[in-house]
Image (tube, helix red, strand yellow):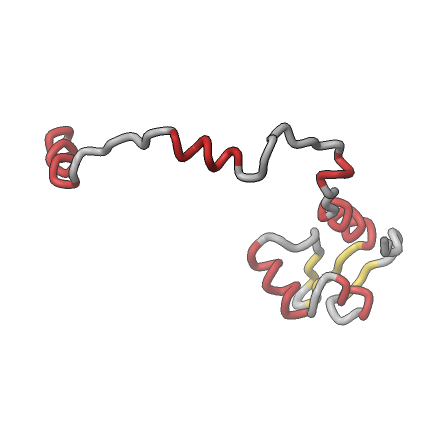
Length: 105
């Protein structure tokens, strides 16, 4: 896996950051709070190599076969078949729900 230099700061135009997406994609992730930690000085956005490495480590997904997860199901879709036999809770008609809400207030 690629590792960023822990002692370096990267700007959004650095080619190494294209591993995380385009500068526009990084800006969108920052606005959503999904980007790696960053430092903003004026209009300039800096990412520390240490924070980028930590972010990449959090993004690692282990396949279930490597986590030791085993399936107890005898056949695929067993959960769906079991769920289909459980009756759904009946809700009163909409008119009764509206009247009940009006009575509570």
